[in-house]
Image (tube, rainbow, N blue to C red; front, top):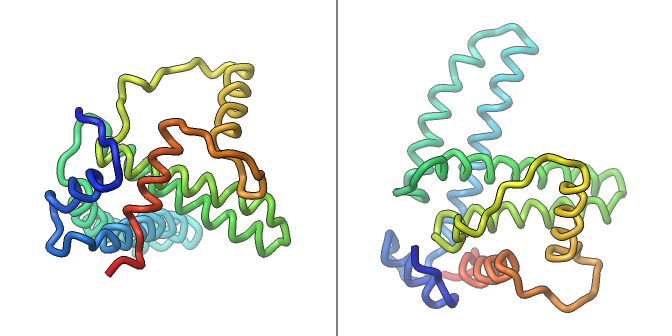
Length: 191
């Protein structure tokens, strides 16, 4: 797995795989948002079926799921192991965090909303990093679910991914580099 060192190489890699217009990264970004919404529709169909007792909601799930899978293949044409499923859950989690963030905003809790929006964006960047081979899986380590380990990890994540109101020099870790790539490369305003 070759590491991508700069934005130009990142853009070229995407272009080489599926782009007609070499600067059109926005269609994949739009497609991932559509996929997020399809995942959300699948979830809502399950809950609507359960709440109402109407199986017609359940009957729609397969059609929506097949559409979501078809569209995911456009963004993730090749993958290994559990990358497909991880990708789906990264997008779904990102979408949910955005929704919870907007609810916090409407409840007049902007600081909490900002944190949730940042976490949503972090997950979105992880999706792109995973699917553009920007993550080296060898560097990912398993930790036991011990309270002190979870606290250390949470503190470390807060250091690397501060909320926007924190004014400090950005860290130069792998995730911050990936976020920088995504900010520059996946730009919906490029035409």
